[in-house]
Length: 364
Image (cartoon, rainbow, N blue to C red; front, side, top):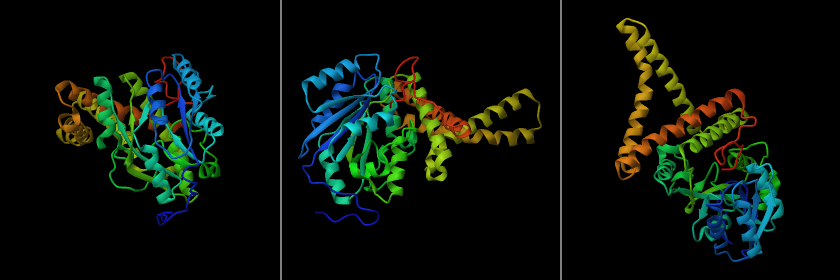
């Protein structure tokens, strides 16, 4: 047995062939579900496997596809998740699963070959309670590819380890995650009152209980972002609102990088106000010059977007670069405005409506 990594509390290490349970919340994923399930069941692991799908009330062909898949493979288990909440669905899937190691999978993701075997080895080596790797966003349309480039860029989502980190070690959270059931049960599973950011909050409780959360850059998962601008904006506003709620609950335990988008929103408001004041009133040059200082943060941000868009991370042609320049502020401003709302008012029943027009759909 490998020696545990120093520091922290050791999670139990079950036998290599004890089995793995994949758990996946699902809603309106007819374009992605087959590939996501196939990538999980194709994982090469030494023991038995199962995948539990928590089915929300889909309005496309997702439920029919899930039933067809389950009819053809006894390793696929279906449970109903009528409220469609992510943490509720995950807890239902956990309750219906059997094995001591749990792999979270999203229907908008595909596990890379060897992902689970590598994660099991890392869990055993580090004695961590949860291990995660890198989210590698990808896209099929020009817009989706632009969103993927933003996800994969430090300028896009703030440089969290799972968006491109290269150094293995202890982590604040884990993307999706490969977890020990005993540790999950001890801390009470996912918090059903948190509709976004539930993974970060779970990992906070694991770390508070003394367990290690571990990042391994050799692990990677393909993630398919939203396919349209309106869906992207709705997703990021809801995510920002729930981060604001987490700040209300946990304060500075949240990383400083989460405060950059709301700071940008405040800077835009101040710059716009100063611009209107300068335009509407004849002011002395000194006062106007002082007011112009308020434009500097926005000008610096615009320069950053231009540098990223025109650089290697902006794509190959002018159309790619234009999409990148449009996507970055869309993500930052919608997330930041949602954050400010969440901090000021609380997230309450805020959900991500980007999965289906006219319906509250909190799934990722």
